[in-house]
Length: 215
Image (cartoon, rainbow, N blue to C red):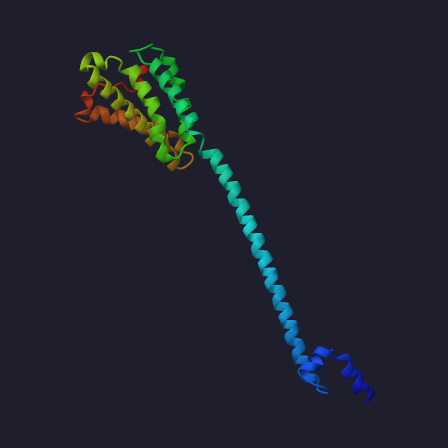
């Protein structure tokens, strides 16, 4: 009797209300349900905390990759265009028709190549265009005298676009080739352009100067 009353008194009043007096088995099931509910709630909160931590890690990693990618692939467009203009002046001065300073051709493309390396492929033609036009002006300063002012100027711009296109294609090819071979991407593109000018029936008569003319 005393033990029975002690057992009943040891059951919480909330459980006695659910289970009824003198019957501990329903109370045990109610306690299990309460414990299971508490466990599930704790597990849910744990999963939510874990998911939040994973999201934070992913966001941090994405931000760091964005920063690194931005630093590696992009510089300001104005700075890139200024580097391209610098290369155009150097390559123009290296041409025999202008200043005939052939040694400048060995370093003349360095600024524009730096600029192109830090630009996305779709923007590289625009960035390389000032270099190509400046280069073409130095190489073909005699075009207006031969073809007239209008046609001479248009031809200078056209050849400048050709130079810019080769630079764009060469830098993209260098990035798509495997790492040990990528270094020859731009020389390969340039050699292919010069070889095509030599063997194509029409291109052989085009009067535009290529890189070897500076030496």
